[in-house]
Image 1 (cartoon, rainbow, N blue to C red):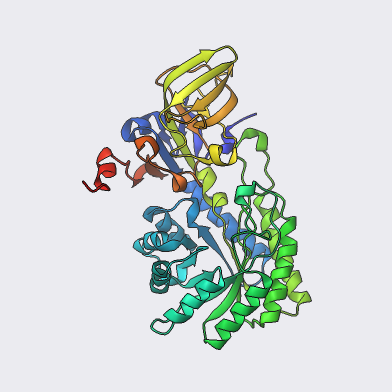
Image 2: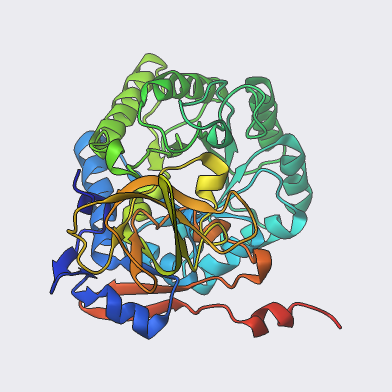
Length: 428
């Protein structure tokens, strides 16, 4: 199957090599080194515009899109989100600081987190327009802080009691999850807000990430809006059923159910549930991460060594689980193409692995591939979400450079870490 649909919109084969945004990947590797992550601005812009169009088509009330910063956040990415009218969902003091450094106003920063410290809450009070409260302890901390600070709006995170079908590590809404308030705790939280004149304006929930069947959302939406009715929200309130719609990471996952399937389903069920509960329609907020940015980026690696044995070929590259731990964490299947002559016929099955001292440092397994040799470049698509945000310095690895491609230009978003960066942290 053709692998190019996994790549950014502007990907093309020019002079028999891969290019994105009109820029040769070979030339970009020469300029920025490898591994390097390349984001295509056109693909980002189109994804944001698609969400806006679908919400306008299916929800005749106020609505917005919130970018899940945990998928990948830098000052440049936060600034891009702001330029497209997106709010940025931030977990903790660090992500809030990044969004604020990008110049986002409080109305465009949403503070999340399952165990917010006082420092996290103070950062949210200073910079965010909304705090999504996860638990009663956190809410009581906010009550205490409200004596000396004016609080932003508060949403309560509801645990609906069921999850979407996805990997167990990315399910969040089921009973027993560490996330959110039970129905009983949610009502108690609303009462605490009333008693202390806290600005309670909405409900949020999230059931999981990387799912392709929206049907569990319908039950959760109805449960959440029943709770909203019991709390007594009036016109102008806010509701977020999270995000988590999946994407295709491998050609075997194509075609993936379209984004419209998800957006239409959510909108229809919110409208229907509000009608049945005699509840004023809320401002609806969707919180996507990977569907905005995953396909916008490609990870570019260079082959350092090739090991061929009976039935298996190892391509050992200069990145791996330190910049993309998802195959090790979730068993995610990725695909790839050689940068030079990507149309070559596959003649062997390859295992793409990194240089790190773990048997789990394998990015791709058993992929039909052309014969490549040491020094060639390998492009791995669908690299824009939940890779760099979970990267590490294991084995002294330095995080790769990140580059934005737009209008034929390449702009550095994050510089490559250096050995000096590692040493700077240590006290001797």
